[in-house]
Image (cartoon, rainbow, N blue to C red; front, side, top):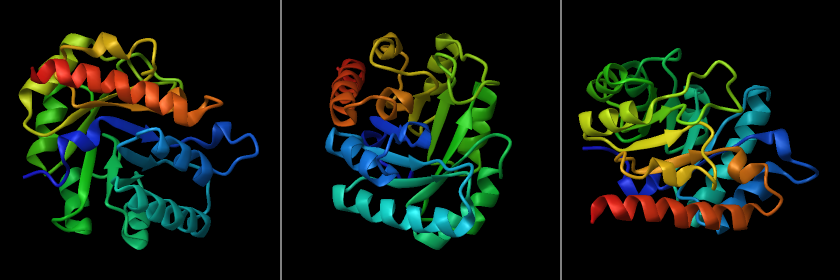
Length: 217
């Protein structure tokens, strides 16, 4: 039984402080939440441990206020210390089984998957959901290979846990993912690089609902 509901995957926001432009990340995340984001992943590559922890605790409280799950990218220790709802790990990071031992049975564990084999392995090791990509390449990961949409569909068919598409997803291309079986889309710049983050999230939420509604009818 997964620790996350499929509807929580619908519009999955991954933070990026590249576009702060005088705002705080907290303010930007709140705008995204007001626009209908259903899950927030805090990704920080360059903050010191204590600063990261303070930011994580503040955004955790914000996500609780809006009733959405709060996930930490990669850093299991920060996730534990701040009381996050879970953690997302890549293939090069800690294995899902090891993460589960550290976090316990009730936390959410997401794992990146690039093919059916990785997807099945992650599910077997206790992942609650998969991030599959990069479906349109990636502006945040220059070494990310593009995932063929036929393979994305195979991944969705192969596992019982939710699958979210990630990598270059924006308002112009998201509808190309219709029919793949995804439970939602993960976005970075499609929200955080926009001037009006609330409006960007509202648009993407509507498009994501359109895709997932088509698949259940």
